[in-house]
Amino acid sequence: MSKDNPGSTVYSSRNAIGFTLIEEEQKELCGLLRRHLDTFAWKPTDMTGVLRHIAEHRINIREGCLPIRQKKRGQAPER
Image (cartoon, rainbow, N blue to C red; front, top):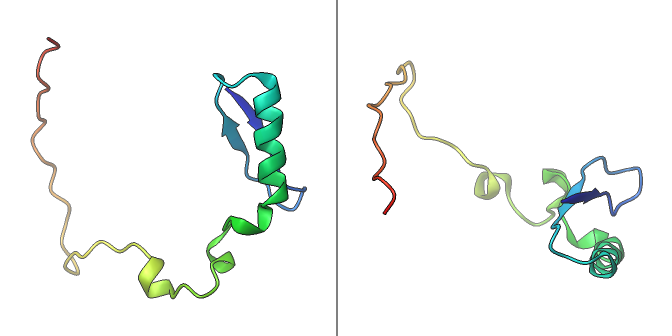
């Protein structure tokens, strides 16, 4: 798996490109990503028009409750 950063130095994230692609396909995919950089949300503030309370994940727990460790569940043996 190769890693490529299709964006300019402004974005520090890297994208993993699958190793099953031949080099020409990898270059084509990276070019496509570079041409459409404005399509991707690199940070939450890039998602204009999406309200934070809709896009934000929140776990509903009671204030002051401690986490409870659950019993380990075994996996079925391979067939």
